[in-house]
Length: 366
Image (cartoon, rainbow, N blue to C red; front, side, top):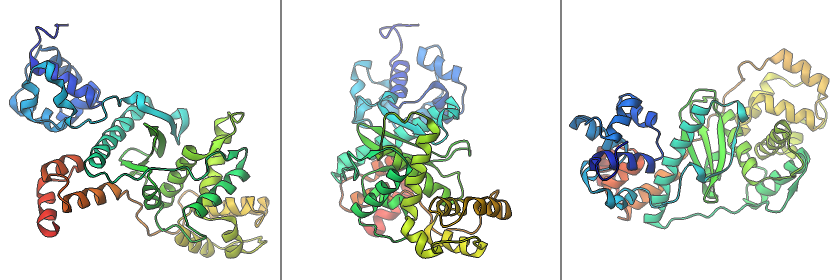
């Protein structure tokens, strides 16, 4: 490989920018529609891209074309987008995927790359605006040994966050208002969600490719469980930990007290109509309602299994009418535009909005 002294500044700067962006050769190649080998040749100085491709590279890396031709010792210009200089994939801590170890490696890296980009954009916006909301664990130092402890933890979270016993209209809004960064990606149904921390900031990544909203709500709260439940270190089995987080999520959506109010103390049969009504009211799946009812001894397990066969869970019943979309980033961005704390061009780069969309908003509201 050529040394930095002999390699053209463009090649060296391209390689540096790609690494700062947390992109693999394949990631960048896909974005500008060339092969991985072509990107490698660009970075090694073996091939010069056309100006059309240079503009495509600049767009993919959120840089100006001129940046590529600065001297290599001026690498600091790359940091205009990456204010947090020591962030890398190694910065992901306590990573938990809903699918456990079964998730493909390339999907893991793709999700992490998207999450990192979104995280960095959000961090830059917050640096520009100082609108920080610091997350505080509402159940810190509460030891969790089983599903019943997880249910108690969920009730404490509801109380601390002043959610009462009301249905949660928007799980994502609640999480974002508490300082959790919720990021959406579009992937195959092989991926549901992950939780992690970056510089001790909690993030939850959800797949907007999962169309069933109750499933996304449950996944978000399940991942919150991974973030805040201090599960006994002796509990090592993946399935046991997942069941604890499931209990936490189910209670967050519909506490046992509400189950008793809605279903009564003892049932042998529950109609489809009742279940659909509860799903639409509380945003929790029919399956989760029945499982919770069985654990609460409202419904005997034998009757639960009979109902499971009778109703079938291949396609869930009813529809929850919320949308469950992350909005905090764009709300913060719009506020920053109104207050003149971020330039329109940078707002477009951070948000992915077109310049015309930013301009339209600015002219109508700023």
